[in-house]
Image 1 (cartoon, rainbow, N blue to C red):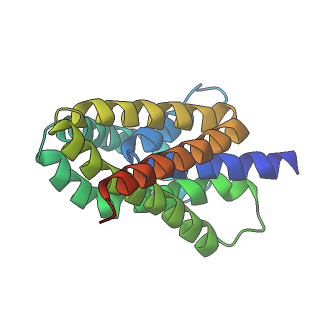
Image 2 (image 1 turned 180 degrees about the horizontal axis):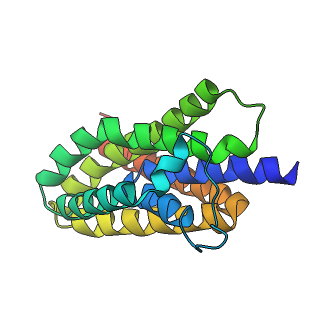
Length: 193
């Protein structure tokens, strides 16, 4: 039972962090499936075990560098978010299904759907919050916010691999916090006549 809860928590944490940056949790899971060599931290079942191959690790690493650079450049970050609208939910679906394989009662389609919804929800929240940051800081805050998003994605992914229940709770708290900030800023902009 504890293993099932841990697997689901890891799945939620990894797919949630994929909503912020698809490649950070993908690379971390790929490396965890490879190291330590004698007994890897993560054991992925087929077809998700392909993430641990060297060619997949190399491709994910290159895409991560491109994502990190593109997300720090004003205007390019908007285009990048548009492209990532398809990639982040897909990565979340793969990570959720690959991580939830500990729980055999979950149908793969349900696991993929849950990951898609979690990562898509985080990405939608991020996409809604970014224009607020752009307007309030004249675009200067975007690289700072992007860096913070990358740090959060890294920490949540790391926690999802090591302490999955804490990662899921942290992700939930962050989502609630972002939603509250966006709502309060929207209320301030709407001035009654």
